[in-house]
Amino acid sequence: MKKIIITALFACVCAAAWGQQVVVAVMPFEVRDRVVTAVDAENFTNYFSNELAGKRILRLSSRAAIDDAVKREFAQQQSDWSDAAKTAEVGRVLNADWIVIGVVSKAGSRIMLNISLFELNTREQLPGVTRLAGTIDAVYDAMDSIVDELAARISGTPAARPVSGAAAAKEYKVGDFGPGGGWIFYDKGRVTDGWRYLEAAPLETEITAEWGAWAKTVGGTGTVVGTGKRNTEAIVKFLQSIGERGKAAQYCDALVAEGFDDWFLPSKDELNLMYTNLKAKGLGEFGSGKYRSSSEYSNNANAWYQRFSDGRQENGSKGDDLMSVRAVRAF
Figure 1 (cartoon, rainbow, N blue to C red):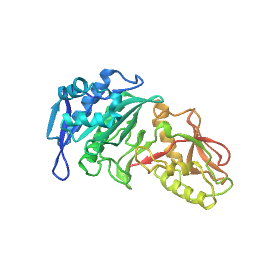
Figure 2 (cartoon, rainbow, N blue to C red):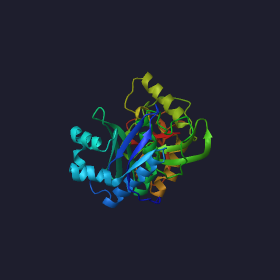
Figure 3 (cartoon, rainbow, N blue to C red):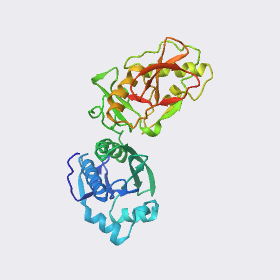
Figure 4 (cartoon, rainbow, N blue to C red):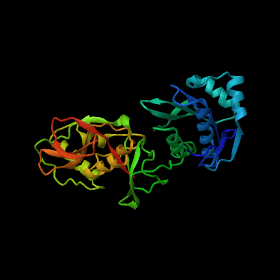
């Protein structure tokens, strides 16, 4: 676990892109579903505040000021943040322009961290940032990208987050929690062809689907690492031409998770890396069924899949056989 520096810093002043000082108050993170302890939540808030302070923050207020405003003066409960008038009054007393509200809750077997923004001038709660994590350590790992997005959003500058086709804003290791809400399962060491890492999508995006194009050949699909995206594009185009919908590649191509829309169905070798580096190590929250790839087999009625029970790769029908589908992205 990352070393936690406990400080009493819960409000900050950032410099906006236009030079105006913007006061941001970070409220204590709320815990729901008992997914973590109150101590963990306090540590999350302190760590988040320190990371935000590292983004060229000009001034910080004490935790005592916020505790006093929230608890003593207004008896504000964390469930009351949806009350615009109450929240705005807290912001007025704190002389804040923005309030940052963090909620830690349960999403299946994972920890969900949701950070929302309340803009005091308009009294509107704006969309924030959500991350899913399998462990408490992964919550801390997610903080960096959350802070980048929120600081950029508040200051009006483009968010400093990794995007497809660009170098990563930070370095990851295989098994790390990725920017798209899933797990990093491949690192080729440097950026080539616009990407370095492969990330598997989070569990909640997983579906079962047919491959499509039964008894027909898309043609030109590859099996090696780096071909999954190209395969997916070819399959989607072919399926559209024959009027098929709801198939594995189409789902991955249309998927949007954590704001990213560059997901695709992995190739045969990419799927194997996902099994070897995640499933076989107890990571990724995969099942033990069959997972589809975007690679056709030589027989035009079949495509490659992988059994996540034992890692064996086989070919099977593209047609009425429903198999698990887990999208990936390259960045």
